[in-house]
Image (cartoon, rainbow, N blue to C red; front, side, top):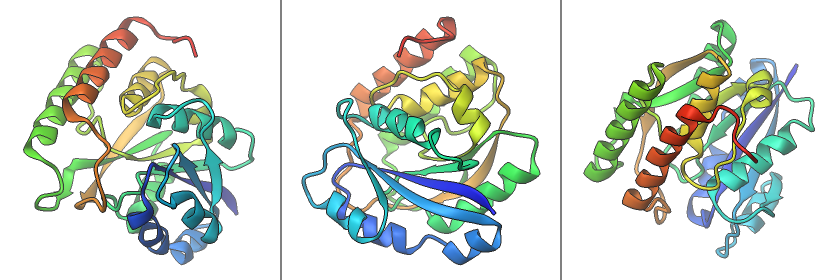
Length: 236
């Protein structure tokens, strides 16, 4: 049996969290030879998200380095490296991603000669109304920019569904504080020559209010892509 961490970043996800955790395919994961830990990293929720996580026997990480998704994921990655788990799956906890597809990502991670599997919404199915036209176009532009700058194909730069081998987490060098973290994971993987592949996934309408400030966050993502093109090893 191999240790698997399922990492769920949250900020006021009380409406969605219990449903997401309830859909985790625990039997299929166990039958695949994994021992599952569910870890919630919370950025300062005020709606009871942390209490729900603890009531569902999740391990809870309360961010101490400041709010922002990037801060939370970097703290959680550091915590992961203190365990002996071999794999980590990252999935947004807002109901947009299907926990049932965790097994698909893990199967590709183990059957392919890669260290990262990216769940691609662009190769999969986006439910009607799940992504605004502005966010869709913005993601397309940012993904195109990433491919032009780094010469490594990716179809969905800003997806929130990833699977990693421990070796990838160890090698990635990150300093993002906000929603630019996924873009930086891609850039760091390119710089560190970490092999990646993509699998198609479903993307559904989120439960609760979106935290993504489209234009502002899009600019931060573009700036991160440009900076990391020339700075391989960022200061933490």
